[in-house]
Image (cartoon, rainbow, N blue to C red; front, side, top):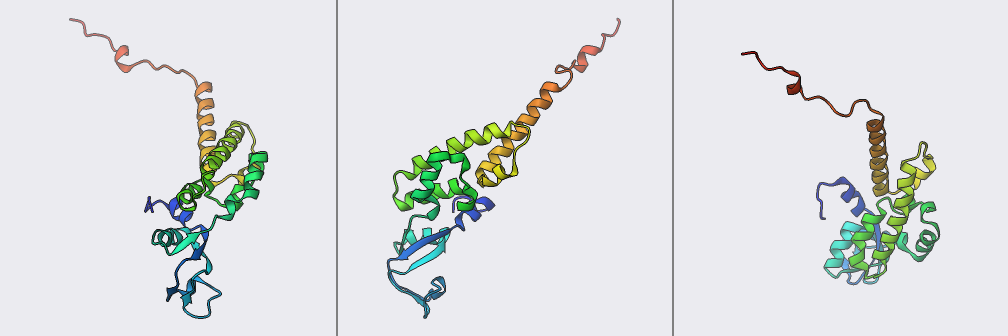
Length: 183
C-alpha cells in the first residue's frame, strides 16, 4: 500500500481479483463461499480484494489470475475505438489498477496497452473539455483518473477565456502614482 491515506488508492486496492490458492489455508474458510468447512483447499479459486491478493502473492500462497477488465475482448474494443468503451464499468480506476497488477501477472503487453488506451482516450477527453456542451453519456464512460483530467482541462479553459476577455491586463504600480515631496 503505497499511499496509506489516499482514498483513491484504498478504493483501487479494494478491486476484486481472482486468485488460485497454491497451498491449503486453515481458518480462512470465509474467503471461499463454496467451502463447507473453515479451510481453503489447495487449488481453490477465490475472489479477493487486491490488497489481500497482493499480500498472499508475495508470500507465494496464491497465483493471481488476469483480471477480466484487461482481457482480450476489452483490448480489442479499445484498439477499435477507445473513446466508445465504457471503462468505468470495467474498473473505475482502470489505469491505477493496471499499473498495480502488471508486476504480479507477468504480462509484458499490459503496460503498452494501458499507455495506448490512455493516450487515445486522453485526446478525446481533452478535445471535448474545450467544447461548450459535453454529453453526460460521454462523462459516464470516463474512469476516475480521466474525469480528474477532464475537469482540470475544463477549468483551465474557463480560466483562459476569463483572462482573455478580462479588462486591463497591466496595473499601474502604487508607487508610481506618488509625487516627490518638494524641498
